[in-house]
Structure formats: structure tokens, C-alpha cells
Amino acid sequence: MSRLVQAEITDCRERIPGVWVMEFLAPSLAQAAMPGQFLHIRCGEGSDPLLRRPISIHAVDRQTGRVKIMFQVVGKGTSRLAGRKNGLIDIMGPLGHGFTIFTGERAKHGNVDTSSTQNDSAVVMNTPANFIVVGGGIGAAPLYFLLQEMARMGRVRRVKLLLGARRADQLLIFDAAEELGFSIRVATDDGSVGRRGPVTDLLAEELRREAGYVYACGPSPMLRALCARLHDAGVPGEVSLEERMACGVGACLSCVCRVKDAGGLETYRHACVDGPVFPAGEVVW
Ligand SMILES: Cc1cc2nc3c(=O)[nH]c(=O)nc-3n(C[C@H](O)[C@H](O)[C@H](O)COP(=O)(O)OP(=O)(O)OC[C@H]3O[C@@H](n4cnc5c(N)ncnc54)[C@H](O)[C@@H]3O)c2cc1C
Ligand code: FES
Image 1 (cartoon, rainbow, N blue to C red):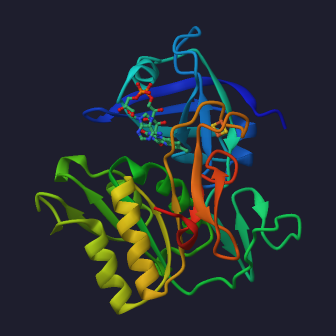
Image 2 (tube, rainbow, N blue to C red; image 1 turned 180 degrees about the vertical axis):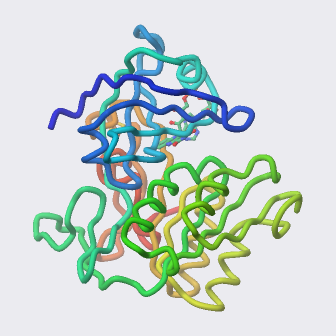
């Protein structure tokens, strides 16, 4: 399958101030996409900005071929993207390794079956009994696609969703996740909804109650604290990193991040091809 897609924009609207959701029609991409993977998007109609911008896949409807991205406007690329209301958009993807999807006794990592011997970094695990999904701020965007997949697999009752935001009005994916039937706990910095404080405090409570495999995406300080909690509790999980990217395909080194290899030695990986999702215990902060 070609990874270059000219997709027709079908909708683009502001969800909360500064955060937009764009929907486009891309049937082949919808079929191939896995939760945690990202798209490298030409944001403007011409060549400005020159570099594509990486945005995670937020939601997929495989039957209609519709794909959604959710993005925060922070600079030139994302503001150009928010201005695109119709026409064709130039997308490269799906790219990267996404979240491990456990199917029966086997785990599927991104679009690579980890039970295959071709992936030498693969760790084959039995399917965990419970899952905890932790999202902070715009980091909740890719987690909705993961929840869609969990719901499709009939795992709603085995998942606890923990969402963190600065304030109540900045909470993302709550309604959509509730509609899918997930049990949700919320933490906000100002206490305007849910528990006051970081979402990692909720995680600590959950881990004391019942351990589960953890999936997380959010700002680096949150992921760093989360990885420390998982390490202390001896609980496995994985985190999606947001490194700056240029090429998106492993050719330019702009996204390198430090990880530990199987022997515990520090080494470097490309977030764009080896990630953006990494086992929590491998990331060097
Ligand atoms: C794999 C991956 C998936 C992502 N998914 C999403 C998503 O689903 N939704 C979303 O809103 N954003 C996502 N991002 C971040 C997004 O790519 C950046 O916000 C975007 O590239 C900024 O482009 P810009 O031209 O608007 O801003 P720029 O002008 O390039 O930068 C504006 C500001 O944002 C900061 N910034 C830019 N890129 C990043 C980055 N990767 N990480 C942290 N800070 C950055 C810059 O340092 C600067 O302060 C993702 C990033 C990666 C690597
Ligand atoms: S973005 Fe170029 S190597 Fe990853």
C-alpha cells in the first residue's frame, strides 16, 4: 500500500478553544491504521510550511473509510491545518509503531505482529486481565482510537480510563469515551472537575487497588512521572512520546530518543519508526 494519500476533507471544526478535529475520507488508510500510529501531514495548501507535521490518528471508521485527527493549534503548521475546511489534504501514513494490541494469546504492536520472529525487540506477553489508559491534555487524542479498538474487541469492562486536564473545559474525549461505555476518572490542575492534582495520582490509587497493563500519552513531565510509578509498582505499560520530527521515516535523526536495550544498556531509537510508542520501562528520561 502506498503511504501517500490525497484525502478529501469532510469536516474540520473547533472542539474546544484551540483544539480542532478534522475528518477526512481515506479508506485504505482507515483499513491499515492501528492505534498509536501517526500521520505526517502537509498542513498548508502549498509548500508552506515546508515540513510535514506529525499528528496521531484520533478515530477511525473502517466501514466508511473516515479518519479523524484531533490537534491543538500551537504554531504555523497547526494553524494552517485548522484553516483547511475542504478540498484534498496530502497525508503520509499510517506511520510508526503504535500501542500493543493484545489479541488472544498474542500481542500486536503497531502494525507488526510481535509473535513474529522478524521483530527482534518484541516481547510476547499473554493478554493482561485489566488495562488502564491514561491521557493528559491533548495526549488524550490518540487514546480514543485505542478505546475504539478495545470496545470493538469487547473489552470495555476491563478498561479504566484516567483523564487529566488543566481545567474542566479543557477535558478531551470524555463524552466520546463515556458513550462507548468506559469507566472514567478525571483529575484537573484546578480541581474544577474530578480530583485536584496530576492524573498520575489517580494512577497511583488505581495501581494500589488493581494492577493492569498501562497505556499512556500526554506531556513529557506526566509520562516521566508515570514511568516512575510503573517502575516502582512493577507494572508493565507503554507510553507514546512526542519528539520533534522532520522526515517521519527514519532518515534524518531529528526524532532520536534515548532508550534502554534488552540488556539494559542505553541506546538511541528513532521515535518516528521505532515509536512513537515505547515500553515504559525502556524510556530514558
Ligand atoms: C508522533 C506524534 C504525534 C503527535 N500527535 C499530535 C496530536 O494528535 N495532536 C496534536 O495536537 N499534536 C500532536 N503532536 C504534536 C504536533 O506534531 C506539534 O504540535 C506540531 O508539529 C506543531 O507544529 P506547528 O507548526 O503548529 O508549531 P511549531 O511552530 O513547529 O511549534 C510551535 C511550538 O510547539 C512546540 N512543538 C512543536 N512540535 C512539538 C512536538 N512534537 N512536541 C512538543 N512540542 C512541540 C514547539 O517547540 C513550539 O514551542 C504529535 C507529535 C508527534 C511527534
Ligand atoms: S523524523 Fe526523521 S528520523 Fe525520525
